[in-house]
Image (tube, rainbow, N blue to C red; front, side, top):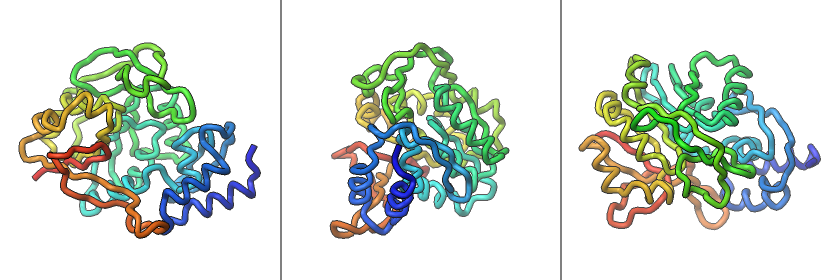
Length: 290
């Protein structure tokens, strides 16, 4: 058990966003390593909402010490919707619900898709804790057809890295059985959404199937898409295949977070640059209509 006084001091230090993230991360991990710390529960403020978690879960650990996991991506998604009236957000691979929770403050509707019960249960608890009525949890995965697929769940602190891809984090993930996948377009059509402004996709290498299943949805609603393009994603979907799946006028931008100024200072929460098709690299992408 880490002493409360030390935790509060490290939390204050971790939330000094003007300081380079790498500096803060190395120091905090030295004292409280998420891979080694025990199950220590907490409740903290999360952008005006309540967030309950445990330090031995990586996203919760990040929320406690830094205020959020992938804070730059959260601010980007918030800013994209700044001028929209009653925007609708879809969170594919919602995990424990941090992104859905944050976006509920800025959206009329949030639809969170998470088939892995261990993490979707934690999302339900967060919805109930904050008495939120604009988040709908769908306990299925999105894909290009209706089926039950083998799921490989992670061991260790990062419980959100489970995948339908057997080669994703193969040294850490273990097979736990089959989970339900639904074809994206017909499922979204049944929701009768008045609009769809933004989709976040983080499904640990399964992104190709998600996008194939949402081709009609992208063509109809023309949303922005924030997507992880990991090594597993690239192994399963080349940039050429990605462009062929998307509507023809969609373009790609690379998202960079925590840009440094010198060695010790943080320049900005996020930065957008044109994607280099000749030298494609992994990371987070913004897919946007022309």
